[in-house]
Every structure is written in structure tokens, then in C-alpha cells.
Image 1 (cartoon, rainbow over the protein chains, first blue to last red):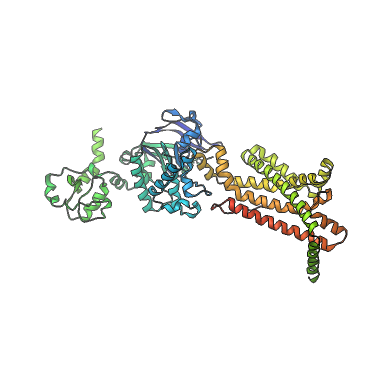
Image 2: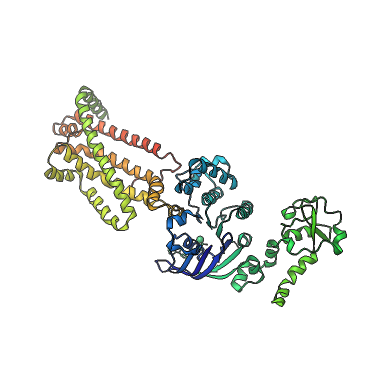
Length: 339
Length: 224
Ligand SMILES: Nc1ncnc2c1ncn2[C@@H]1O[C@H](COP(=O)(O)OP(=O)(O)OP(=O)(O)O)[C@@H](O)[C@H]1O
Ligand SMILES: [Mg+2]
């Protein structure tokens, strides 16, 4: 767990990068720092592994003020993907990835195995292992940077725009890959981006920064539902509803599988090959992981008035236009009424 | 032109008819260069590391190095003479002083040319200051440091001719006494062999460097 308590950082030249920032990242969750350039995201990150120390306030890791921790141990236990990648040009890709395991004294065999594992994970061919960073593309270098940060199974992972130099397709794939990894490893992650879509996708929680301060710290859902002020609303953009559709799973809007749509979906559930984005049209069923956006897309392209949501061959619900509309069109009103 | 070629051939003829003496002088010359250069490297590289690491040390170290360089080599020799007397040892000391600066400045420049990002990454990985120096900064600075060593060595081969003035021996014997006696073939024999020596040493060091840095790091910076 990482906790920022009233943290202010003023650089020696007098620039105050962040002022009175407080938030905490629960163990095993991902918090995304998002905001315009120069608002203090990188500074916030560097305060965690003590590349910088706060001018005021405390940063604690697992309940201990990090200034009381040995900075070398702290850093070796904290994976760090720096914004500029910062690979060691005189070392091969393999040696770069092995940096921290070597520092903490893993044996060669274990390092070797780990490097291979990470190359596979980052979808880098094993041939890259003996190449030098100067021989790689920007995107490949970035992936090596992420692999290097993950190498020694750190408890805390700091990622400063780790997917910035990737094309949209690769970025999307690595984001998904990373969401999977995140479920498997129990790492506390602080992730920096200036792309709100990436923030919404990757974060359990999001801290929206304006110059030097956190304006809103909340779940993606809550930020979309209820932006705290105009700055946040502007930052999210005009297509707020679309973004919400994208991060909401169909299971949250679907209706019961019986009732009026039972007939419509009857006989439509066998050829279940639902996949993300509806690229497959053999069947029209949705899977519980699909987003409402995918469901809407499929509905718009389909003749059927409703689509079944199928899990392990069993229909667990149906989605029709009206479910989506009911859930999204009137949701905020309903919420406000309830509270 | 024909005169120059004639003198050159006469020089070679002189050299080959005095081979034993030539090898004697060459050996002495090499001893002057190697010992003074090795000492200069051993002192200048660590000094450069200290200067690059501590801003406060940097100014004084550089100004000492600069002063050593601005004094003409002949004057350095002249200064060495009253302090250390005549012969081989004072010559080595004078050459050593004169060889320091290129190695020193290039060591500093090399270490400082390592990018801030690379250093940040190394710090962020949890490398101690010594690990950073040993595993990141020095290897990355190696090409630049080596360029300084090569420059310094080539200059050293030339400066070592002057050691003759304080009894240090070397190829200077042929050149300087040849000038005094107006013996052109002798001058030529001494000068050409020294030039060849400088070229051979430079290429040799380049080869050593190539083997040391078997990495993708390119020579990006050479001496000023
Ligand atoms: N070492 C430093 N010395 C002085 N000022 C600094 C230093 N590092 C950052 N700053 C300043 O602090 C502010 C915040 O910088 P920071 O790098 O944290 O921003 P950022 O949110 O990461 O920006 P970006 O999205 O462009 O990476 C900026 O005004 C920057 O100029
Ligand atoms: Mg930044």
C-alpha cells in the first residue's frame, strides 16, 4: 500500500511541482495518475522510490514513512519504468532485463529463465535477447523497459507512460496483456498517462491532476458518472457516455433471460462464438466480459431485438436497447434520487 | 620533390646501417612513453571520476590539468631538471605531467555524456553510487576515455623527443644531434620512425578499445 499525505514537492530551483497531494493506493490495485503535461505526475512517482524526497508531508509504503526505509532496498523492490525508457545502451536486451535480479543476487539459471519468460510475456522474440537497444524500434525498447521493471517480481510497480511510444493496436494488446498480468500478480501499481482512455481502462482508481494538485481521486465509473468540476469534465471529453459504455460490462445492464425476449433469443444461443468487439458473427451471443459498447455495436448490426449473454453454454441474461438506455439514460437521475 | 625522396631514402639507409643503435633508441623512447603514459592514465582516470562526481573538486582539478598543459613541453623538462636532475627518471616525470590533461578532460566529458535518463533508470533500479559508476557510467564513457588516451599517447611520442635535452635518451638523440650536425639522413631516420611509432600505437589502442567495448556503443565523441 502506498500513501501520500499532504505531500508538497518544491525543486531546488523554486518550482513547486505538486502541492498538498493526498491519496492512497490499496495493495494489489492500480492507480492511474492522469493529467496534462507538467502537472507533476512524474514527480509524484519519483517520490515513491525516493528518487526525490518530499519538501513537506509524507509518503509511506506499507505503513512506513519511506524516508525510514533503506533507499537501495526500497528501489530494488520497486519496479520502475521511466518515461524516457532509459535502457542501458552498452548492455544487451537480456542484460538490461536481468539488471535487478543480478543486483539482488539471483543465480544465473533463475535469471536466464526469468528473462526468457519476460521476453515471451512482452511478445519480444527471443532473438532480441542478445541485441543491443540501439538495434530496436521505439516500441520494442519500451517493452524491454517494462520487462526490466517486472524482472525481480517487485511488490510495487511504477510505470511512467509505459505504452506511450506504441501504435494503437500494440498498445491495446499490451494494455490487455497487462490487465491479465495484474490479475495474476499481486502488485501495487502506480501508472502514469496523459491519455484518459488509457486511465479509464487500466485504473482501479484514477487521480486526475491539474497543475500540481489532485482534483479528483475516484474509480473510473465514479469519475465518468460524476466529474467533480469543469476541468475534470473537459478532461474526460464530450463522449462521456461512450466511455462509460466501454468500461461497463454487459452483466451490469442485462435483464433476466426469461420474459419478453425469451422467444427472440431462442435458438440463437447455440453458435456461441462471442468475442470482443463482435468481429465474429457466427453467433450473436455475448460473453459476460464484453463491454456494453460491444453489446450496443452488435445490436446495431444485428437483426435480433436482443442478444443473449452466455456463460459456459448457459444463458445468464439478455441485452436489448432498452436495457442499455434504462441503465445509462436514466442512471444518474436514479442515483441522485437514491442518495 | 626529388630532394625530399632522396633525403627520405638516405634516412632509411642511415637507419638500416645503424640498426643496433636504432633499436636501442627506440627501446628507450618506448620506455619513456609507456611508463609516463601508464602513470598518466592511472592518475588521470580516477581524478576525472572524482571531478565528474564532485562539483567542488572539478574546478581545482581541471585548472591544475590546464596549467600543466599550457606550459610548453620544453619548459616542463627545464623545470624537471633542477628538481630531479638529469636522465631517464626526470624525463618520465615531465612526460607524465604533460600527458595528464587529455585523459583527464576526456574522462570527465565521457562520464558527463551519459544521459540523465540512463542515470535515473540506474538509480531507480536500486544501484548504489559505486555500482552506477562501475556498471553504467564508466562502460558508457569508455570510448571517450579511450579517445583521450589515444590523443595523449600520440602527443607523448612526439614530446618524448625533447627528453634528449635532459639526458632522457630516445629517438630525440638522432633528430636533435642530427640537426646540430646538419646530418639530414640521421634527422630523417629519427623523425620517420617516431611518426610510424605514433601511428602504430594509435592503431594498437584502437584495436584494444574495439575488444574492450564489444557493445553497440558507438564512438560518438572524439577529442577536442
Ligand atoms: N529536477 C527538476 N528541477 C526543477 N523543476 C523540475 C524538475 N523536474 C520537474 N520539474 C518541474 O516540475 C513540474 C512537474 O514536472 P513533472 O515532470 O512531474 O510533470 P509531468 O506531469 O510528469 O509532465 P509530463 O506529462 O510532461 O511528463 C514541471 O513544471 C517541471 O518543469
Ligand atoms: Mg512525466
